[in-house]
Amino acid sequence: MSLYAAYAGNLDARLMTRRAPHSPLRGTGWLNGWRLTFGGESMGWEGALATIVEAPRSQVFVALYDIAPMDEDSMDRWEGVGLDIYRRMRVRVHTLDGEEPTWVYVLNGYEGGLPSARYLGEIADAAESAGAPHDYVMELRKRPC
Image (tube, rainbow, N blue to C red):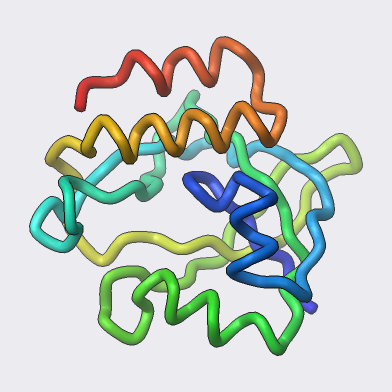
C-alpha cells in the first residue's frame, strides 16, 4: 500500500469509499509549507481546480489514505493523470505520530482563476467531515468564487 494525502474533495471519506473502496482512511495531518489554491480554469468543467503550491508559513489540512494497489489506477483516472490534468508528487505530512512520506495530486496548470461556489462548498464540506479545525473550514467558506 502507498500513503495518499487528500486535500480537497477527497477529504470526504464517503466519497473516497466509492473512488478507492479497498483503501482505508488512516488519519489526518498537515502539509506544512504549502497552501491550497486554484488554477487551470480552462481545464475544469466549472471554474478553477484545487491544487497546492509551496508557501512558507502556510499549511493545508489533509486526510491520509492507505491506497491499495488495486485502487491506484482508478484514482489516477479519476484525477485525470492520463489526461495531464494532475500529476503525482511526493510530500511529507506532519501527523501526531511524526512525519509521514506521502503522495498528492498536483495540478498541471498555472495558479489563478476562481472555483465555482459549488466546488468550493464541496471542499469545505469535505474538510469539515474529515475533522478540519473550524477556522480552517471557515477560511475555505469565505474564499472568493
